[in-house]
Length: 108
Image (tube, rainbow, N blue to C red; front, top):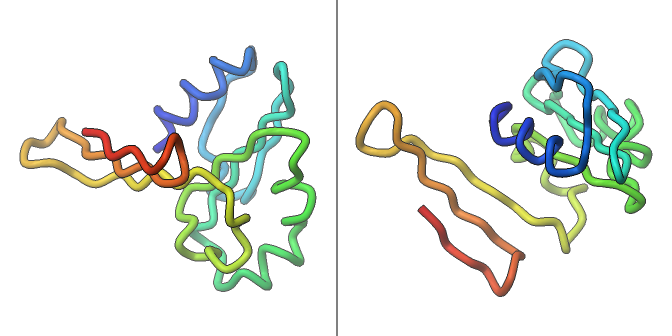
């Protein structure tokens, strides 16, 4: 998840090192657009995320990557691109399921 997030950040021109915000919940970086990286793993509910500043993190003026978004799906915008990552048959294989992007592309 974090490796993919680093690639998205690089594509947006973020020069800072992107790390997983596991303990801080969210980090923000400067690039061509504001880039926000959220880790919802430690959140107990969407309400807890809303209290922590969801409106700012999910603002439409930038890009927000949310790891463990299943914890807070009820507040993820309907037009969000959802990428689910699963392990493949081999240890280094990943399967990506992408929704809401170019008519629901499924990619491996």
